[in-house]
Length: 484
Image 1 (cartoon, helix red, strand yellow):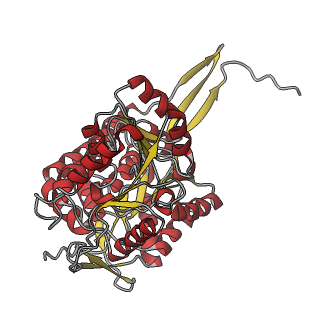
Image 2 (tube, one colour):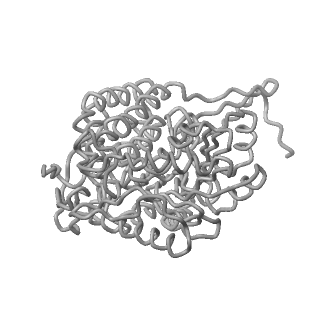
Image 3 (cartoon, one colour):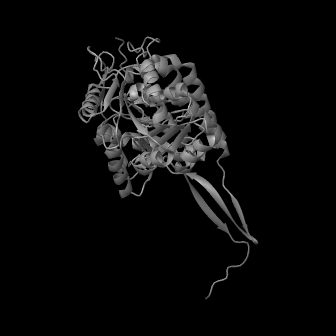
């Protein structure tokens, strides 16, 4: 197994930095269980160093023109694309996701974000409002120091999804990747610096929840952006609220995917596979409650079983493999527990549900049918390759059932009746939705959830609103009329 020990654990102020007194963080390759690197969690001194660097560098960056900032981000995007192979292999080692997937979905989407926001940076303007002879103008200004806290499923992408709009708006960032997948963000920081980003503007430090808490509560921090679970989101949101900090929360989901009986079955099965088994099911927006109208239920299940059982499970570094291991032994065991609950509560196992013997953290992709709304596997986010297929009769019924959840991240509809597709999507309580496809997330489109699935939006022009603030300036052209 390739050793991918990074130069050091942290990247601060344009250079790699180490403090070996921090707690050790072993990086485990999910396909074999082997430790491929060991990093150290940030000590209080490292946290302070990163925030001090971000605080010092930010005003100079904000004073540059958007064109100048954007040029650096676009240069970094080109460099990421040029190094896509190496970055994808690192992502596979970090996460266990198949190279077939990481080559097209991870570093490339990070590059897309840097390119998009690099192009947008020069267009961030204010407004002129005429008031008779007086007028008001607005300025779009940076927030200051932003903290990004990443999840372990898309470490390269998340670093760029947070870093690109923050930097485009003139902010600096301290990014803490998940302790499970700490390697990729260091490369993003290194490439940004090589592309000409001034030192101190994008810093990466490692650590667990205590390091995240230290960042979120520090008075130097103006904005916190988290991708993670609802329980973590509650804690981070509450901590950020103490300082009245700006927040973006991209949290979990238990999203509905509705298949009407006039849908193209092959496309619907493909959408259900993308919405449940890509990244071994470790995707926040997954449509894990698949509602299938009774008229096509058995045809859908039969074809789904055929296609799922054709998944190529194996070495993630083999480009023929299209289904890899879970990210960790702990996550695999959590998912196995849900599979046991599904069987115990009476769901019908169509395929999968087994742990694969060996040192890696593999499970077979799992499909349950005859799932009812009250079952645990239909209510709780599993974050693994477990699909729950539920029956329904009519449109009004399925809309009510789809919305009967505390989550609201995503939703999908498969139907040949586009009027119905738009009508149903219009009534579903979710932020990121699809009609006749699933889980596509281009940087041009806003991404984020409703209800407990989060607040704020990532990507698109909408992200600019979450990484900048407006200043209004009233300009008087005549004498001041005061009462005394």
